[in-house]
Image (cartoon, rainbow, N blue to C red; front, side, top):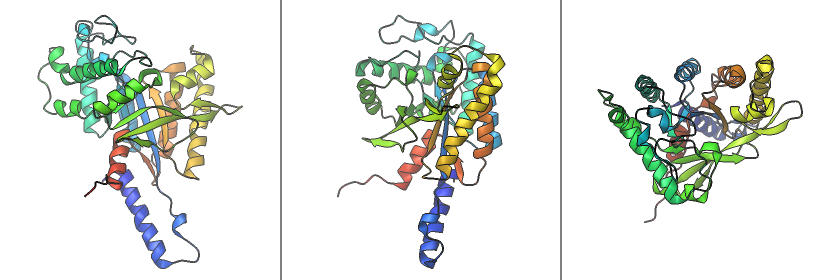
Length: 332
C-alpha cells in the first residue's frame, strides 16, 4: 500500500472513531488528511541528475515524476528518426544524446526509476513551443514520442531490450507541455490519446486538480518569494530568471538557494497548517545558479517528505489513488 493511500485510510479510520465517540473535545474536523507534495523534473536528460534524484527519493521515501523529452533517447546518428510538426527531420530545441552509450545509460536510469515506483511521463520530444499547434500537430508529436519510446532499443541498435521495457513505454500516461504552453489543440489530442493527466497549467496559488472529461488537470502554483513576496511559478527556471535574469551568478548561489527554500517551506507550512491542498514543485536537470535550486529541493524534501503525515508522491500515483477513492459512476 502506498504512503498516500495508507495515510488516507488512517485518516478515515480516525474520523470514524472520533464520530463514534462523540467526544466533547475532538470532532471529525480535527483529523487532517495527509499533505500531498508532487515533485517533478522536466526534460530528464542529465545522467548525474537522474542518479541524484533517485538517491534523494531513496533517502526521503518520495516518488517523483520525470517528464521525459524523447529526443534524449536519440543520438546524433539516429536523430533523423524525429520530425517535429513544421520542422525538418533531426531538429530539436534541446539537442539530442551525444552518443549511443549516453542513450544506453539513460535508458538504464529510466528502467531503474520505473522499477523504484517513479512516474515516467511525457514532455513531448523536441521542446518546441506548441501554443499554436493544431490538434493534428500535437497528435503527430505524441505519435513520435510513443514510437521513439517504444522502439528506443531497436532504433539505437541496443541489445538486448529488457523484458519490462514495453510495459515502461506503454505506461506513459502523463504530460507537461514545453514552456507550459497549453492550447485547445493540445487538450483535444491528449483526450484522444488517452492521457490520464495534463500538468501544464499555472494557477494563482495552490489549487486542487480538476477533472476534465476523465483527464486530471494540474497547475503549478505561483508562490510568494523573496523580500517583497512577489509571486513566481514554483519551478526552478522561473526562480532562476527572477533571481539572476537567467544568467549564472555563482557568487550569490547560496543566497538564491536560501530564498528558494524559504519560499518552498513557507507555502508548505501554510498548507500543512491549513487546508492541505496538494503542493506542486517543478525542476529541471540543469544546475541553474550552480545548483542552488537543487540544494533547496534536497533540503526541503529531506524535511517534509519524511513526515508521517506527508505524502511526496508522483502525479500518476495521485491520479490512481483519487480514482480508486472516487470510482467512476455509471448508469444502469
